[in-house]
Amino acid sequence: MIEAGARIGDYEIWGRIGGGGMSDVWLARHVLLASPLVVKTLKPHFQADPEERYRRMLNEARLMARVPSHRVVRATDVRIHKGTPLLVQEYVDGIDMDEVDVRRRRALGYGLPLWFVCEVLAQVAEGLADAHLTGILHRDLKPSNILDSPELGTKLGDFGIAVAKSVGREQVGDISGTGPYMAPEVLRGEAFDRRADVFGLGATAYHLRYGRPPFEGLEPRRRGEAHPVFPTPSGPEEAYFQHVLARMLAPHPEARFSDVAQVRHLFDRLATTTRPPSAAARLDDGTLAFGPTRIVCETGDLARARVDGIVSPAVPELSMSGGAAAALRAHGGESIEQEARNWGEQPLGACISTGAGRLECRRVLHAVSAWEEVSCIGRAMQRALLTAEEEGLSSLAVPALGTGAGRVTVEASARAEASALRWHLLLGGSRLREVRFVLYEESLRERFRDVLESVLLDADGPTPEVGRPDQPVAAAPDDRTYVPAVARSSERYRG
Image 1 (cartoon, rainbow, N blue to C red):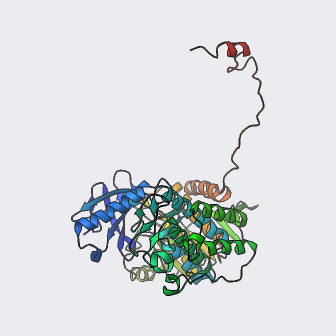
Image 2 (image 1 turned 180 degrees about the horizontal axis):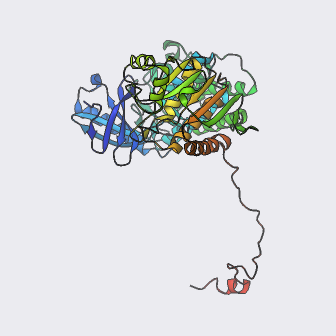
């Protein structure tokens, strides 16, 4: 069994951060590089045969490592520790798309914008196309297997039931997958190929846009009689989106797109057409505005901020014994810490909301964000912003998370927080009208502000150069690189 605090080779295990029906997911730290990693183990009831467990983990690791794509979560190691096979893979500092969709609907009353769904699916299709061209079928496309990092974009994970076959070759396999997203031919146990993944991607796209899978029950789909029903489109772009999904979700494989690269191209075009402006504007007073939300970076005392909510840099035990958290407890009273600790120990990246005691705010959001230079700040900030929406907060004060006991640099903290804020506001519908980043020293504020503005003001970067006009350029005789034309022609063929 793997345990928190264990040392496995160069990996130090922090603790469990999640899992699914078949596996547990642990956060680890490479002790030499101080980089975050994820360690995946199978749940006990899937661990009857040690050799079979290891074979399964090794197969998943090999398939993940084989795909040449930055849109696929990368496997880095596989080994056995005290009889437990484990898979080591990169850590993605973000939350899965199922959590994003569910929490937005709960907090704001509506789902994800069309451009964002198309952008996410285009990136997933990019990774999936690379997998197919490597001869790998994923077989388990669904929102919870798509991770979205505000800094890195979207990545496809969980190759636990993937299979390796030649591209285009049909595969007869076991009936494995997640019911609502499985193609009819897979449900029947028939031969399937990469068009089954096209179906799964279409079902995922439908879910992310409309809040539920496209089909109820398995029997109509198994019989090949199920066709998706769409709501009235909001405009021509959504009508075209529905046309693409209808083809992806066709009951017969022959009617679907044969190549997921086609799907990627269509989603990418839709995302580009419907995407809103993605950069903030600088106001006359030097603050930033991202749509209706004002963004301030200031020096001050976080505990005295007059806002609806304050984000507290928390440790897993949710004790408030150091740094900004201790100042919040000193000003607001011990009831804040007592309420927080009632939640028990929390994984890195979590965010817990409590009362504010005597502080001049309504709620304190305890964000567990870093450990021994390992940053989960992006994930914690995403959840803090979603929690603020769920609590109905309109203004928020945020410190530089992870820079105390977590030993993350101010610049890394600023980039992760700014990226998460930009991502959150871009999705639209936010109730936040003011976000104040509060630093306790002016020198720290300046460093934080520089990164914050770089992310928010220049989010898309400059337009890339496409090359100079194809015109001869004459060099001046006094130019150090000047070579007379005669010399150039006479020396051209010298060995």
